[in-house]
Length: 346
Image 1 (tube, rainbow, N blue to C red):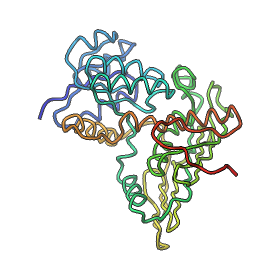
Image 2: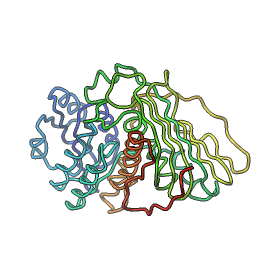
Image 3: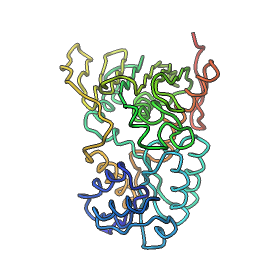
Image 4: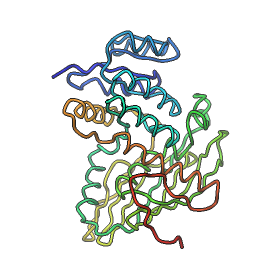
């Protein structure tokens, strides 16, 4: 088994989670950490026995790397990912893949042209109960999809945005409650329900002093004819778990937080547990699963759980919701992979 030498681009909280996730993956280790603030890069590098850099060029030239994991502000993902790809280094980037489909497409193209793998960290796809829900949907046990309802009622105090200058900005965050916090749920909605063809939506800033929205709602029209809704906010004190309901002609399945609490095609349902939403990623196991999956894809030349094209889909939906909010009219989701065959909005 060949050794996988990993570089971390970013030295903040999520990169610390990436470092902990690498620990325990056989044949992989963190070799280098880049961060624009030298002290933070050194602190993280020391924790995982790596070299620290505050120069991106020196980071790439200082040692050989097989893979970089990018945990910088969302609006820098494309720049940092392309810099690695052009050097022949595989790229695994935090969600969202970028802050616009135009920039995401540029990164996807650079990775393809460079012959490297590009993956996006949507770790929820690999959680046990989420996989069970996916199996229920794909097996047809719920019948024909009718409605998918998704809610992200989270809380972020004002300090959350004040402590990181990039958060809540269009330039580096690309959006708010939907783009940053809700993006995992948007991804699961696309993954479970299939391509989304058209959206209507509204976004607003109701509480926080930020450029972007802290509350958004959307109506979804899936290419298969199903309908859906997404609600996302960072104003819901004290915060509750994300919830997804998949309703079909034969039954309903409900994901509450990370637990499948109801999968009823025969009237049977389990009890709903108490959950609490947390802004921190305290358990690196889901990220470890994504990293392990991506490393296996590199080694075996197999498909990763979420490549660049897959990671783009949720971004395209969020982008369309923002456009619909600005225009006040339904907006087609940007995609070159699906035919737009939907009925009228009524």
